[in-house]
Structures are given as structure tokens and as C-alpha cells.
Length: 168
Image 1 (cartoon, rainbow, N blue to C red):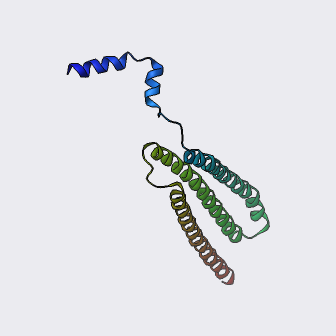
Image 2 (cartoon, rainbow, N blue to C red):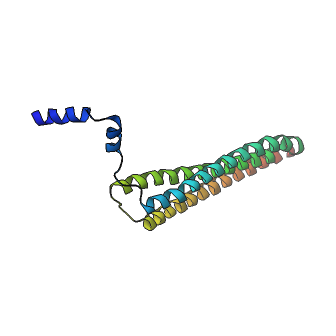
Image 3 (spheres, rainbow, N blue to C red):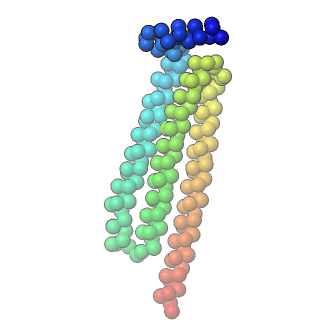
């Protein structure tokens, strides 16, 4: 009990710089860690930038195209095209954003893990991340196809109803 109390007093007597140094690792980053940061940080930032640009382009395209479709076309066709373009743009933007954030998250977890004990080597971890990105891209592509088919079927149903209304 007395030794524990003495140790606490000794820790409290440490200067602030000694306390901070005790929290930092004793050695610098390894070459693998530096390489991981040097490759994945710009990649993640680029993908986030691409997500933002895609999102902005989608909104700008919708703002410009919607009035033109409404003025120069029947109502159902531009509505279907606008919905399809919006869904495709938002899904693409989301996919880029999720990919960028997941790569940054993976990088943070990898670096934390490297500080303790490396569970896997860098090439294996990169291969695993590559497979996850491919799986996500496949999932987003499938969802995009399903949504496009749903929009197309609703547009055809609406077109059929409009023709029935003009015949009677």
C-alpha cells in the first residue's frame, strides 16, 4: 500500500514534458506505417473530393435539367429521367464517400494496430481492403440497377395510364 502511494506521488512530481513523453511510443514510425500513410491518406482525400464533386455535379445537373425537361417535354418522361439521374448521382456520390471514409478508417485502425503488434502484413491487409472495396462497388452497382429498373417500370406504368386516359 505504501509503495503504491509512493509511486503515485512520484508520477505526480513528473514534469509535464515527462508525462507527455511517457504517452508517446519510444520509437518512430516504421517504413510500412509511413508508406501506408503516404499512399492511403491522399487516396482517401481524393475519393472524398470526388464524392463531393459528384454530389455537387448531381445537384447542378438537376437544377439545370429539371426546368428544361418540364418546359420542353411531357411530364412523365422528364420526371422519370430526373429521378433516375438523381438516384444514380446520389448513389455514386455515396459510394465514393463511403469508399474514402472506409479507407481512412482502415488506415487509422492499421496504424493503431501497428503500434501494438501487426496482425497481418501490409500486402495482405491491402488485399483485404481491395476485396472490401470491390464488394462494396458490386453492392452499389446492384442497388443502382434495381433502382433504375423500378423507376423504369413506374415510368412505363404511368405512360400506359396516360395513353388509356387519352383513348377514352
